[in-house]
Image (cartoon, rainbow, N blue to C red; front, side, top):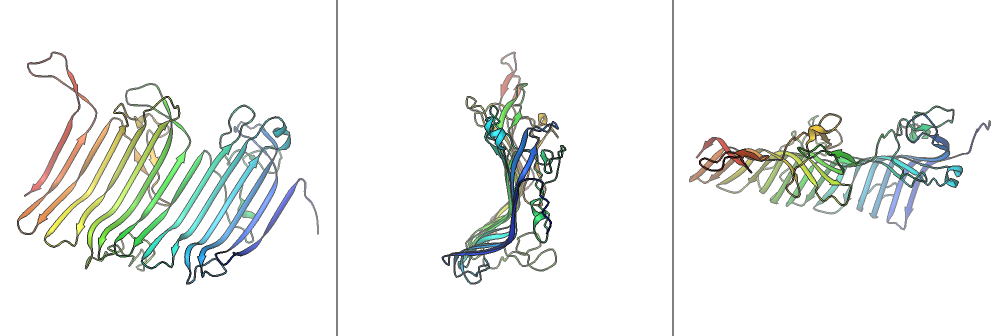
Length: 428
């Protein structure tokens, strides 16, 4: 046995199976490691933290069950409770070394990525609530360097893991697992993001499913329309794609009866055929949206900003002699909370737009408004027995203010708000 350590190093690994009072059980492969590194906090090629401590944790094949009558290996079996299956976790924390701490540096940096195959409530008749392909990502910082508040690391550039004077070393906590599993942590900026596929079914009455994403990133500068002065804001991004929903009786309307390979895959999508035989209620189909909520960092500034792009269809089903639907709806909003100028997204860098994630593998939605905007369009159909039938395409639009000249009135143009309503292919 050769001992060739060149610095402080601690590592523990193995397979863990645990239980607590018959209520919690679980199983996972894990490796825990601590050692010392050098860190380039601001990516200028110079050491900022010398002999900093790093702790990494990697876990794979994680099963966890919380409830009653579960199996010892963390699976639910015939139990009732909350189950997590086929999860993995990579986590790293860097803290200032003893010399930097003595100089007043209290900075700490955290990076984490968790991938969960599935998680949700099980064993409750008539209730399905859970998520699949769930991804949780975090890159945060706390403390100060003695003067300036710490900001999250660019993990792809900041680390000198072997302390040889060069940075940009790759951090992969999963390399120490047996067998090794790639779990590279390479976040470049502040991030809190959750993505996945969610499903909620309550007996025959309610069904909601689809991809979703929630993200809170770093603060950015935005420019209100017509302004050359930036406003520093925090941004919350919420997105969804391929959302399907039903609320009513006689359901569930949406059922997983097929998939890309022709067999059920646990997701509702265009491959599945709804059960229309007995369902009566409100249906949402193929809903996608991207929402940005922006709030000034300066508490003295009270104007907040909202931007939204959404699409999808909504209709009633199962009501004899009555049809009402709004198909291929598109909703676009760019507003402020006090009716002042909203954000001009063409001034954002890079790309002159803001991208909103909508799920683990679905396309982002681009917000690219350049003026105040409210627009709703779609195709509406109303039919009541043999007596009434109305259908057609409509557009409702309220954009920025316009200047008009008043006939036989004021000489100077007048600024007015304009609401535009249009329709085409109308049949009655």
